[in-house]
Structures are given as C-alpha cells and as structure tokens.
Image (cartoon, rainbow, N blue to C red; front, top):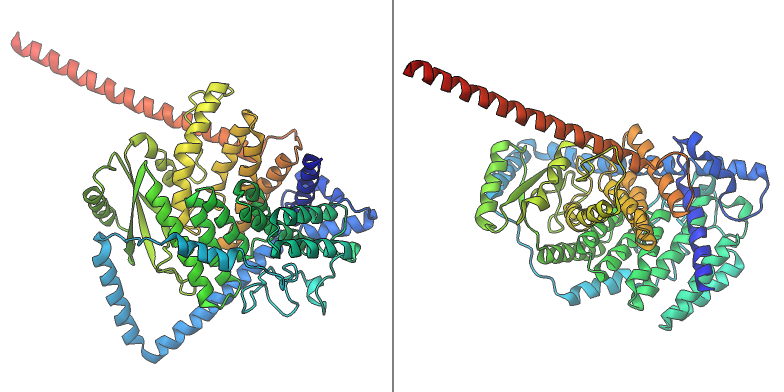
Length: 571
C-alpha cells in the first residue's frame, strides 16, 4: 500500500516537472509527451494544447527573468560606482592600486578556516531550515513583487507569468488540499513529525488527482509547482526532524526543481547533505542559497550572514575529512600568470609536503569564499584553488577538466565494445569514490566559473548510467534527481548560450524520461556524449602512443648511426 502511494506521489511530481521544464528547443523529439500533462485532470484537447504551449515557454521565461534581475542588480552597482568615481576618481584609482598591490603581496599566503562549533550550525538550521513558514501562502509570489523576497525573507519565488501578474489575489488552493495541509501543519507544530509526513504525502496524492487549485482549468503550471514545492519542502523538514535524511533527499531535490529561486529550498538541501555527511555538496547548496537570497532581493544582512556561516562550516568540514587531497586558497586581484601559478605551487609544496604527487591549480573558474563573498560587488573577492594529492592516480583526471569542455572520465580501453560487469563495477568505484568527491569539492566554492554550463552535472548522469547497469535503482533515482535540481538552477547562476540551453533542456527531458521509466529509440544525451568522449580518449591515446613510438624510433636510429660512426673510426 505504502509503495503504491509513493509511486503515485512520484508520478505527480514528475508530471509537474514536465510541465515546468519541457524542452522548447527539442520540440520535435519530446513534444509528444505534452498532451498528457500537466496532471491526471480530464480536460479538453483545446485546453491541453493551450496549456502545453504556455508551459513550454516557462524555462525561457525563467532565463529571461534571471537575466533581468542580474541586469538590474548590475545597473544598481554601476550607478554606485559612477557616483563614487564622480566624487573622487583619482582617490578611487589610488585605493584600487593599493588593493591590488596588497593582494599580490598576499599571493604566498593561504586563507585560514577557523573552526565553527556544531552548536552554531544547529542554530542556523533552527532559524532558517526548520522555521515554520505558516505565513508563506504556499510560496506564491505576491502580485506586486518582482520575483523577490519580502523583507522578512520568507516568500521568495519566481515572478508569475504575465497572465498571473494581473491578478489581485493569490491563486485559491483547492479546499480539500487546504484542509490536508492545515492538518499536516498542525501535526508538525505539535512535533508529531511522522503523522505530519503522512499528511503531506496525502496532500501530494490529492495533487495527483487534480486537487491543487480551486480553478484547475485556469491554473498555470507555475502555480501548481509552487504548491508542490511547498509540500516537498515540508516533507524535507519532517524527515530531518525524524532523523531520516535519506528519505528527505529526493524531496529536497524535487523542491528545487519545482522552485529553484527559493533560497530555503537550497538551504534545506544543504541540511540534508550535512546529515548524510556529504559536506562538499552541502557547501555548494549553501553557497547557492546565499546567492539566490541576494539575487531575489533579500535585504536582511543577518540572514545572509547566517547562510555564509553555514557555508563556511561545511567547507571546513569537507577539508577536514578529505584524506586523498589537501587544499590551499590564494587571494588575487590581477590577471593570472604562469609565474604566479608556479609560485603558488612552490608555496603549496612547502606547506603540504605529504600531498605533492599531483598538484593541480584550478584556472578554469575562480573561487569565492564565504568570509569575503559579497554578491553586490562584481566580481567579489576571488581566489585560486590549489589541490594536492597523495596518489597521482587520484588527481590525474583533473587534466581533462582544464583541457575539455565536457570531459568524460573513463579508463575503458576499447571504446567500440560494451562494458562488462566487472568493468562497470570498477568504473563506478572510480567515478563514485575518486572523481565525484573531488569535483564536488571544487564546485563548493565556485558558483559558475568558466566551465561549460552543464559541467558537474554530466558526471553525475554518467554515474547514474553505471548504477542503472548494476540495477541499483534507488541510488540511480537519487543521483538523477540531484542532477535535475542542478540543471534547474543553472540559468540562475550564469549566462548560457543557445547551444548550452538546448543541451540543458535535452538533459532535463532525458532525465525525466529515465525517472519515469520511459524508453526511447534514441540514446540518452549523456550516454552519447560519453561514447564520443571514449572515442576522443582512444584517439588521444593513439596519438600519444604514436609520438612515443616515433621518439623511440628516432632514438634507436641515432644510436645505430653513432655505432656505425664509431665502427668506421675504429677501422
């Protein structure tokens, strides 16, 4: 009975995903699924068609909205800068020169990470994660707000579509759903968390039967997603209170897919990762939460300060627990030069002598630390990240990160043959224990950088494919849900090209199809990219072997020639 309910709930959420994120670019490939969305509501074909056309535009609207917010924030910063220049241009230039010189002198120093007590971390979670948001109105944006947080920081969402902006009141929740949510919230406040979780699951079941809004035929997918996201995030807090973070994990990912602009969704995901001792991923979620708080207009400095404290604590814990590598952050303000990088590596060797088998300085994307992060000043204080490994094999894959846009990490020597089970197990261990932990740590202080928009996500989808081959379905679903949450967040973190947008939407569509068990004649996008990567690796290997053979052949010829000359001279 419970498993049936769980499948029903997951089906509901995935349908809402498809409403919100159905690819617009690849319409010919995926548009055939649109007539069956948004839910199991029985509506006329005309209404379905109209709804589907609107829903395909939501992703593009979100991207445009994010760009608009960024431009607004950037324009405000530019105005302040121009004003300061007008007041004293020479004085400002003098200050800037002094700052650069000071930071250049700091190039040989590392950034200390002070210990943050567990009590401080728990205080942040009590204030921002477990807060009872009974006044949120199910995360609907207020009609007068432009995708911003209220000054209380408790109602951040995306701006509703134009059709919803003209409403004078928030969308009306279905009365039966409202009763279920009220009962669940009452149980939560009474600390009956298991009962509350059951009530929230019942609310999701009502959503699956079409009981979401009072006027379902006029409902917009964005509004349905807001309700579903609210329920998902409440389930996260219930399971965290019950100390069952493994059950909370998928709900945390889904809440972000449904509403990626709400900073608390990311912070709750961070709390789940912390409970699972996945500190690098917790740090990245906290960093994104802080950025979203600023991006969506959060004005309370104390809230941002608490998020940064949490982010800093997660980075500290990740560094402390890392056994295979050590870390050094170096502040800088000028252009990165080769001599500076060499100087940084020299300092690293002196300070971390046990981790010098492989040293990697990340020049692909600059890093931000919570101690100095200020999103309102662009760019914020930036750092170079240097990683050192005890074992060269653990770090050699990072060469691909700096050399290719979408690297695939595989030791498969025969790209044109299928992986055996033994090869799959070995590759899964390599990716899961050696590659992903390092990439997750690198991304814990890197909001976007110069990487391809889908970098970091592709590796998780490759890992999910390996789990699927080994029939580890539960773990595969968790990894895909996490990848979908990251894909939904990408447009808010960086500007993406048309090609990247198409790739992002194709990945999201294929991920949803995989979760729903839908099979296709075409291969999943990430598997196609992985095959291309294998062939690319194979060609690089052939080239290396050819150059090595050529070098040996030349050396032999020189040696033979020298022997002949010596023989002639002796005769």
